[in-house]
Image (cartoon, rainbow over the protein chains, first blue to last red):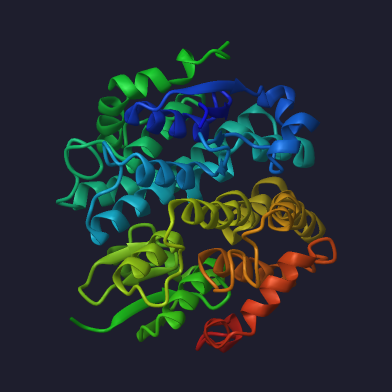
Length: 216
Length: 216
């Protein structure tokens, strides 16, 4: 067993998610930075160990390659159970996974750097187009998300009760990304409150983009 | 306890995933069709019960609203365990979730109908642009996916061993969508073999787009 190794980019929202989970669980790891804007993740040495060439990638202590932030976090939760990042009951788990995937499947992928770059290259999108695109997809998910959080008795200090978990990790990382695109959070008071609360926790601060070795 | 209700669109790849899981587990349900191309999912009666206004949405037998295909399938797997759709060990579960999310987070969302429609409306994308866009994002994920399946001793008749599960559900639904965009599957022989095998299983056939009440 050796130390876990996280391949990351400080500003990557999905890398941020995994860093938060690692910090919450107190799992130490070596940090390997890949500068996405310089294409360092598409170079041969990295592709040799991670065919997808994306971050985050976590090499676990036994050498296993783990990809996909939500899959990685569920693995960490099953392997290092304390503190739990998912509720114990199937209904609670379904709700937390649902809220998480609304961000991880419906919102973030469409606003990912490689998609925004494709819009510029293929369709000549300019800075304003990119900003509008980003904000549009945030609203498409945050409007129902805000309403679902408002309507549910399960919503507490965090997305699901009084402990931060997977949904808060996804929410906080997304809200952090939103800041770079000047998203107006006024229509989303509950999301903002939860994200602000989460981002002030030690594990979230330790994992924050600005506190990574490759931060610019 | 009443019958489960699935809000679905026959051609929706994520609805197809949930239909397969329901069929594999032998769970009966009432089918409510929403014609996405006619915008029926954005009408007030549906938005009143599902704020996100997307399909699939599953109202479980106790009335709980379940959204997000992977969250729904994990709920079904926890609630109706037989046959299992995820392996029992954390490493196997991480691998199956990883393969599933490569499709569900990196590929499908970018090729979703609402994104393709936005490309047409915002950037004047034509049919050829849309086809190229779709094929590009399939390749971006299928190339590493093929290599990862080829390199792993865990790959068997299906993505993970000899039983169909969550990753095969995602793979088969994606391959089915690919057909509408004429994706050349020659570079992906393992993916093609697994998808063909899965799509020929009774549960996959029962759940297939062409066998739904709203098929055109």
